[in-house]
Amino acid sequence: MNPFTPEEDADEIWGEAFLRGKAKYELGQKEHNTDFWSAGASWYAKEMQSEALDSIAYIHHLLARLESVKSLARLMKEDDGMTLSMAATILDHIAGDHPPRSKQKHSKHD
Image (cartoon, rainbow, N blue to C red):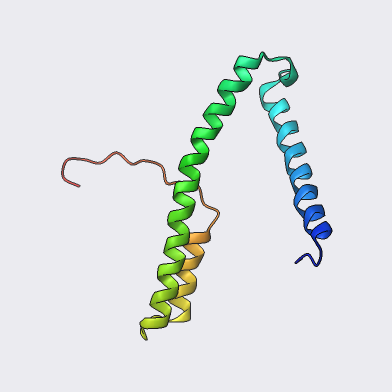
């Protein structure tokens, strides 16, 4: 749904954030079986720092994927051999919901 007003936009953003945040919190409680609220301030600070550092890598790779989309758009404009099917396959991979590949052990001959 595309919001029509700032209020509808805010409702959509924060409603979804609430639902996802609550589900994530409850899953974490089940997985870790802790009283999350009982940690010390330094523990929270270290966890936040770790998450912030992870987010830098996520943003870097997200920006790289967006550059790939722009490159594909240029190809679609300039290359008559680029079919919609080819472009759709590439876009599906770029925007996909797959996790990173696992590292494979390579022999010296690979």
